[in-house]
Image 1 (cartoon, helix red, strand yellow):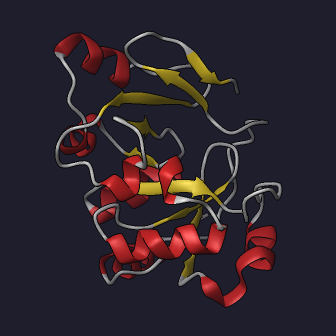
Image 2 (spheres, rainbow, N blue to C red; image 1 turned 60 degrees about the horizontal axis):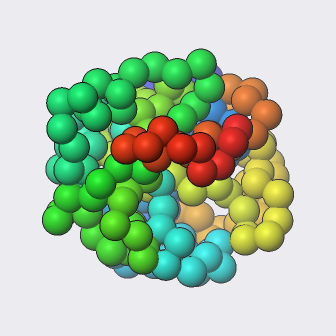
Image 3 (cartoon, rainbow, N blue to C red; image 1 turned 90 degrees about the horizontal axis):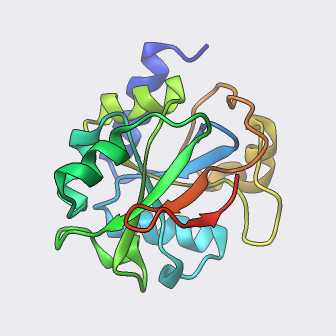
Length: 185
């Protein structure tokens, strides 16, 4: 179990421009403050991931995502609905969504996390977090803290202990406008 102290330490790390590794629904993730361009750039370098691909934001509740999305009430209801498996939604991005998050896309990928530790991290920081799988591009995403540390060692500023929820695959990605499945879970 992750303690309140560990959650505060992770939040402090994020607020000071650091990168954390933490459990999500199906894999360990790398995260930071989405408005901190230097931290996001560091994550992209660690993963060897091009900025053009974009990144996912997770939040504990819909209000944390509202500055980053440009959606109507019907879309808001869909985005706020709980799905059986973790679902990341591609939504129209607001003008406040930075291009180091959206990449080359006009949409932004967002998810309201149901993982208790990830949810508490978002609550503790007071904003959404970047959430990208803990792996170098082309390698299998880490499903344990040990594997995450193996991949990144001292290149990550803080490791949040905990377990994934056990979903077999990363979140499903769906387009909020068309309901098209971009990535199946």
